[in-house]
Length: 386
Image 1: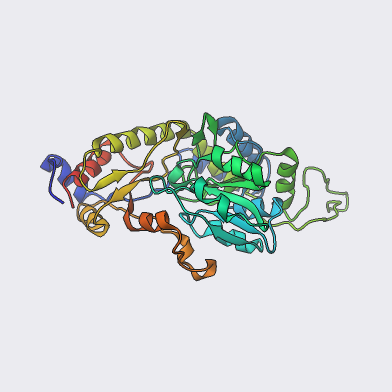
Image 2: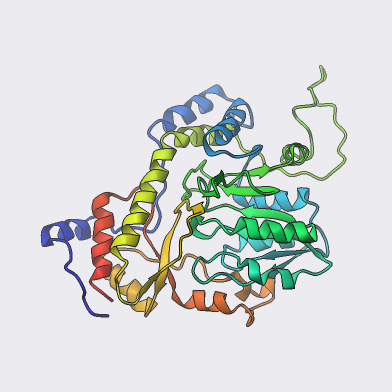
């Protein structure tokens, strides 16, 4: 590809290239985190307690989540959503393959089978038009993965689910702070699963949250995150044990107070950090609009991305990656379609848009450690060509 624009002035480019390379991801830790976490460590109470409740309350208040239950990982959230939804042995869950393997391994963990539907080439998300013909009498749920933080077409997916009486589970690991038709992701579907892993928008070190729209299902989530014991409804006796009777299997999926302390610290300023990502995404889109060999994903006016990633399609992808690496910038496909794994049945030939997406998609740096100068440098480096 030919050079189409000038790069940064030599002095600026030299400064950026002699500094640490611009990475794909970074972990954000708020300056108040050490004090908050230190206070928990000093207290001697590290497990699930008041701070977990405070963290859940703030997730609801600040991000519009409905009945959020804090958990020890986003993968735990996916598995627990499937379990509480009643997905089990012999059932099927329809989902997109453009995701991380955890989306599908949790389906297998629940005893069910992932059934892959095709994606939209211009978003990476599940294509509602390819879902309905894959429904069988064994289908129990549709899992919608919001690739890169951009919401799926939830109205179309929910309409299909309603027609066939299916559960909708959103894998919103990338989509903290995103919205669809003016409503927060975390308030729309039967279940919505979030990740607070180290490089996500909000980290608790590792962790997650599960939102269940139905209050009774939310209570089941809270019971089953800790072995099936309802902590809120069972008191500790004088003899030192809770009075309980297990009626369902549960798990050790709860979040700890020291992880919640980190999460509470990192919630400070989250709105502004999300707004900054929107500004950078708009700048990437505007200033890379006319670059030959680069095709942007298609945004729609009825939804707002969380911009965990910023991606597009490119010609000669390996050349693109190598050119950026030579200029001190990381680029990554992040994930290819997971249907290629033997565990999930192997490469599917009927997922036409997924195969196209696998060949051309790429992502460039988008994280809280970026500076305006670095964003400009990434843009100018791409405009040099590859």
